[in-house]
Amino acid sequence: MSLLNKEKIINFVLKRRNEDGGYGFCPPYYGSEFPSSPSDTFYALAILQMLGEKIPHPHKTQEYLLSLQNKDGSFSSMVSAFYVVKSLEILGSKPRELRFLNWLELCLKGKKPVSSELVSDFLSAEYDASSSPYKHIYCAVEILKTFGRRIGIKEVEWILPEGKHGGFGAGAPDIISTFYALSCLHAAGYPLRKLEKTKKFVEGCEHREGGFTSIPHITPPYVEDTYFGVECAKLLEVKLKHPDRSEKFLLSCQNIDGGFRRSLFQGISTLDNTYFALACLKAFGCL
Image 1: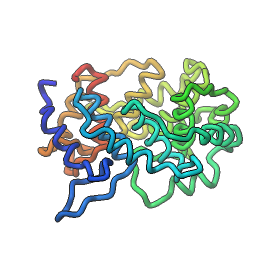
Image 2: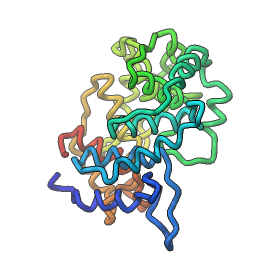
Image 3: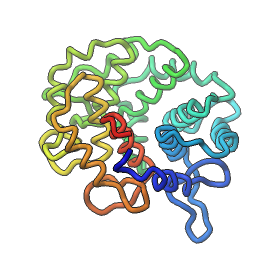
Image 4: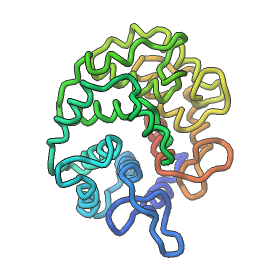
């Protein structure tokens, strides 16, 4: 932690806490709060947890998260449900109504590969650095895992086979979609060691100057691609060639406000990129 200013990172996060207990994309601007979102709230809580910081007014945040579940137990989207469930897990809580888990199981069993519903959500105007046509499937699997529900290989086997040159994606493979696919297959007990071409794909995404790119042998690396690349390497038991360079790359992406931008070039700090960077640094033993 010596190369990071812990207090500045914590302050960066807490400035984004709103009166409703949730966290927003940016601090209040001219007295007006940026609306809280389940994703920003999750990243904020996860950052504070990683840093060993006490979460302020957790009951207020819990109330905000619980308010995002509809009276019938449903959520506005699969992704929203994921962030709410994972945020409540950090707080040691869970949704009031769990009937939606049965719906998730039915959805997973009947899901077609990259359905029109899935693609239309993926192409929405809402920015999400971790977007992928596979994210909805990943969210469903992770929620069910959280509550001890078993995932069968039949529910996710449509993800296979891997791409011609390795990796997974809609049309063309990318590192984010590859992580979601690998994570779902792993949860179902599929032997990832069989995916030799995907190992080569992930190895090719590791940038020679540190970090990861979305596809092999391009430049520049980005923080979100680095996070998903490191996670792919863990799942596939791939040894990183340049962890020291990746550490340097990530540290170079920290802004003066304590948060992290997505690249070495100019950019604003965001909660998601700050989480991605810190999670990687933790994996490298820097936290």
